Length: 445
Image 1: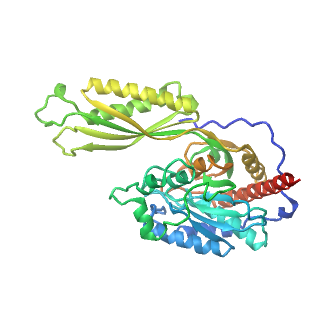
Image 2: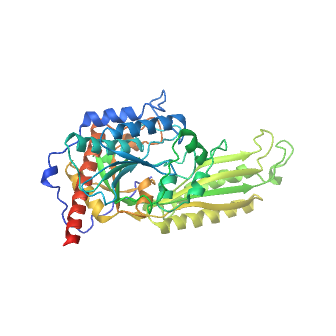
Image 3: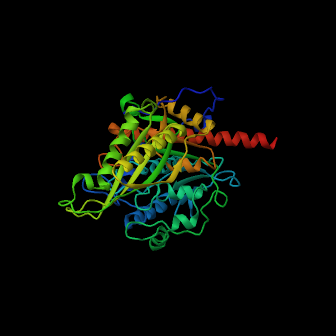
């Protein structure tokens, strides 16, 4: 499948040169990678991966570590009612909200050591650089651990940054259940991380939000570049597809008398793949995947009477997601009719395509240039920055990962690439802090 398109170079923005007083500030590569290893102690698996689901005991332990670690660098902490943790280091002008450096510490059940975790670690490295050099930036800075970004235990994904960004209500998010019926709210209380700070931009604002994340795709690895500039995030929609047939005996029911829901589901999976590989959306980066399938009654000699599918549709443009959805609906209805099935098609989550703030992206672009990188990418995956961008200027740095593999224990980024991601974050953040300093000074004149 073709990679997502690299966006064209935009019209140049005014130069955001790094202040001379910051010119000597650089990350410590060995320290960055040591912090990464420390962050992966809880939930590590024998195959080298991670299994640290939201609000399990390992998640509590890494949260405790995060607070303890960031206290060393002059931070105080806010924990909101969704468990989002803000480690805030004061600035010269504390009437301003902090500039956020955020990502997540939860993982997939068979995840790796870099997805989300690297972004938090790079934020901590920025704190360490400031602390070691006795630097007080103009605005405060906050390293943020967003709760339940993966959505692996409590779907949907990016749930608690979504509450902060106004997409979901607190009641909805706290009421999300795992497979055992535990709610997120109950589990936050159990591990001691349901805070008292309201989970909203209005009650607990940020001034801006930078995020470092592994690319989770092959563009940087193919180009042999350690970091990339993220211009925005593609459109994503998730669906529950329910297929109802008729249970019957496999040995006594003729093939032409069946309403086999599982057979219909299999054909829908094939048709989904055909739509995004053989139609007009294929060269434009359209993607669709059915990775969840549950059938009943799960008896070897009974024809499946009911099947539930989880459908994920993505494309750089909202219009292409809408086209893929339309084509899937039409194809699924034809399959249902041919096999005597009924179907419901529920779109339960939308994340429209977005472009990040031009000034923030320019800060990342100039910082990335200093480590020899200029590749610009549209993210194929959703991130917490999707929801922060609804409220504040936002941008992202991507870090190369081997073969583009993610959500798997084999997920890997080279130590020098992790350090390059932290260096790009430091440079971008300091540029934006200087930008705010100048903007504030001009406003007072």
